[in-house]
Length: 479
Image (cartoon, rainbow, N blue to C red):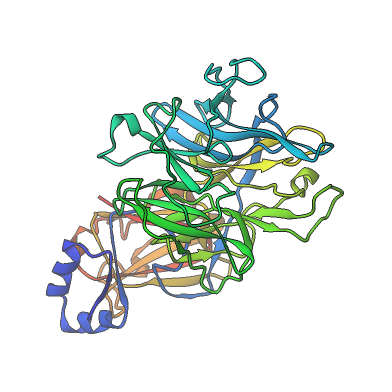
């Protein structure tokens, strides 16, 4: 039998119309039904074989400080930042808190709010909702009996969401995680008095969001497993009644403390979950500080939310700043924002945010912005010597093959369309594809000036890529 991943009508039609040799070849492989979706190369899901190439993790570029937690109601342990795009603005939520090293205790915890038009410059609006030091002139958005430690909001994309619950959040309290709702993202209330998720360890940024591909809410929260901090997940149809939490599976990756998870559905390819955990090493202490432990940011991806590929190399290293080599720094905020590039005449890029100078004895705790090219988390990387890649059998809907790629001046990309038996399709051989070189987010491939692939819709094909000094980030069959 065929092993079909994400089947659709065109797949069923292709199974009926395929020739006997095609069916026999595909029976030993997995057919990937990718429709017209963007497919980033964050894993080996599309790859049948590679020679001379490798999947390469890329690191984001540090930019300026996005926001300083310098108000009296904020402080040196301000953390658990959430960012998301909301129509004409970007929203940010975070815990404002401070630790007094002389008194050896935390002084306060409140939930704060900021917003931005560009993801670069952030403002703290005066909300006048909650008192701090006898004044409401602050940006405190929540200070209730529960939830203030790690309030994690999102805008609900569920088409059946009620207006009064357009924004939702999880926050911890005695007994587990509590559900919150808001009509505007500013005025919040508990959904009910009892926690909605009770199994786990919740002293972290525990989060949930609407999974538009699978039509459900999905949660990711902390749990302790085998003596290390790890991640549990559960799902819900109504945000109130949740399935029993299950441990997420990291395959062969060794157990490590994952302090936060920052898991999100990638907005350009929502069938893929991306995670940005903060990896914590409690025994290391490179500089003088009252508390041991250092952290970095790591990267992982999943296609079902349960089984994950976790890179062991760091996604964000502490770097040259000494204040990032202190206990519990380098915490990646939950959320990825599309922002304008700093270099003129270049495409929009992705912005992520990471903490620094957390637990500062002196100075101010900050959140720094980092940037990547669109889809630039991982690539198929080719050295100058070159190499090639062949995909699993594919079925698609669309007309043109578009690539997100980058080459050197001497590098190149070429593409061949094959049948499932690895035989080149006439007119779409490698020799018919001119060398592609440059750096583009969405380049349409042409064979002898012919980009139209619509005659292959509903058929099983493979793609063969030949790369030289190049990176291939993503592909898509455009409508």
